[in-house]
Amino acid sequence: MVKLKINNQEIEVEEGTTLIHAAQSMGVEVPTLCYWEGVKPMNSCMLCVMRDSNTGVLHPSCSTMCQNGMDIETDSGDVCSARKDVLELVISEHVGDCEAPCTHTCPAHMNIPVMMRQIYEGDLDSAAYTVTNGLVFPGTLGYVCPAPCENPCRRKSYDETMKIKQLHREVSARALVENPELLDTPDDTGKHVAIIGAGLAGMAAAWVLRKSGHACTMYEREAKAGGKVRHLSEEELPKQVLDDEIDFIGKIGVNFNYNAEINGNGDLDALTNQYDAVIVACNDVAKPGGKVFEAKEHKLDVRAVGNGKVTATWVDKYLKSIKNDPPPKLFDSKYGKIGKEHLSKLLENKTAISVPKIEGELVDSRVEAGRCLHCDCRKRVSCGLRKWASDYGAEKKKFYASEEPDVRILGKGNVILEPGKCIRCGLCVAIAEKHDEDIGLAFVNRGFDMEIQVPFDHDFDEALKKSAPECVQACPTAAIAYRNGEDVFACHTSTDIELKRDVPTLTDL
Image 1: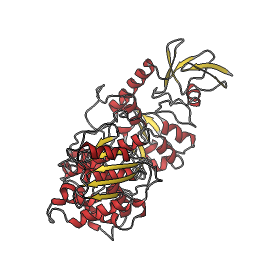
Image 2: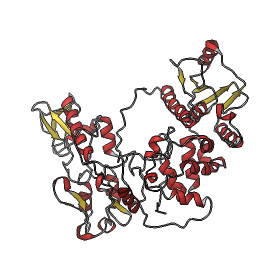
Image 3: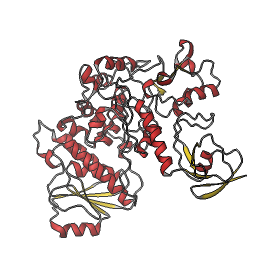
Image 4: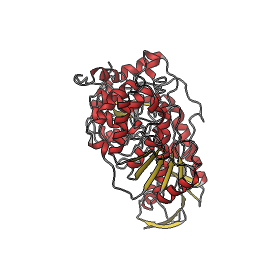
């Protein structure tokens, strides 16, 4: 047996145990990009380094064996600094969008590209699930939203922007049909929230909180919910669309008290004594503090929805006694401006290997949805590079890299490789070798020009007949992926915590 210290704690492990396994046995999370159980250590990313305080040496923990007397630091200042440097070197060459530009600019943070893929495939129930959890009022916003998501759409620079607003309006009615999945709520938490103001912000907050298992009661001074959109003309917003979506919120268990005006601190004090939390979603009631939170209404209706969703997330954490410290800033890679020549390449490369016949409901909408370029990453949630760059605060522009975006997608079949996203970790090469592939993968060129290719001009489907699933799973950046695949964690709720379905085929129309 080998005795050593890890983070000042004595530990005894079997001889031949690596530092990473020893640390993991103690519950220490070790960052890696090139490590994968079942293949030999690659030592290509050096993100897993740990420091032996006896010698001051930084060791790659995936390949360094534990030795008697080691005094290992897994997260000291030197270690974290070295890891940040590694990440900044890697991301300086990484090319791709973590999130699609349309998703970035949606104030309610709806996963628009997923909606596009679902509509195109004719999976309208799933599309309804996506737009309702994302926008709460997809039909109403389909009329009143100024569609800030459409302006940055990459198709606009190529030919014509995607008709995002029209699409979520057309599919929204699907949600109002009996849809058990949308009406599901988790077990009751026993917590009860009062929401003052039944405008879009307040009702969006109620939706998120009910979906988190909390009881919600709304107090509205008017005779009907809806706030300022209630006063729009019938031409601007058919009231039946608004009323149907409000009724749907009631169906998941939100209670509405109408003609109930909350005045002054006395009324508010009574509510704070009666409820576990109070959300103020109207003007001039009170300032937030303690168990009182604010969800600001906004002249931009979709922004009001986004505000309500964000406030509800904070309230949910408060009710569940989860520390409300803001999470690290999420690393976000972006292509930046792409010229028409490169957009043509994206359009060419995104064409699917099979084209399902489009017929049935909303045919025109499905054709329109098929124009989407799939700008978002296929691993936008589970990407290892994104996670660790966020955790260590790595900066994208720390080191110079070429401003010419590499938008290539290699592969004619189902398995593809995006060289711009590849960090040359070598995992796919090693995994193909482990599976004893007849063709497999190999590195070509050297230095900055080095990249993964298939030998002898074969295609990736031929090269990875046995190992493709493991290669796709192991790839830390979705550089190697299924053309029609989707991140197993990338769902279409606002929290990205559950999988509803795999998103299938895309095609160019």
